[in-house]
Length: 119
Image 1 (cartoon, rainbow, N blue to C red):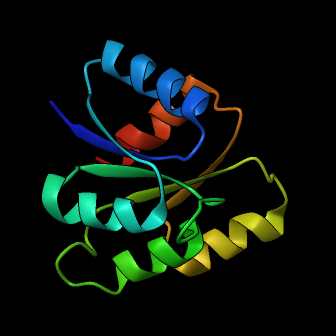
Image 2 (spheres, helix red, strand yellow):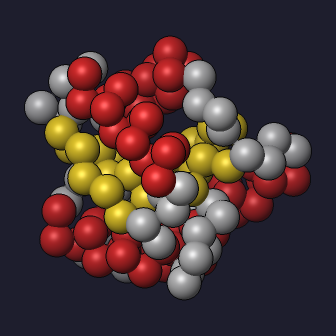
């Protein structure tokens, strides 16, 4: 069973996404901000991370960049999630080190394809 870390500050988004992924057979862990997400990446060792970009304490761009610059966790794939669907937002996420990008609200079928492609 693949392990997914969801880094998301919005409770409704966290709950919806975690339940839907658990029903698909994934083991899910949650972090509510970028700093907690980095710590969870080190302790939980997920197979993939779904990283919201608009997070408190440490935003998703910074957390992604820090993760990709940390040899201990840099190999973990990160899919950036944001409600901002502009091409500039995607480019910014990819520059930060994200392995892929998706918009919210999440289309689960599309997101699952991206998750499976990175696993």
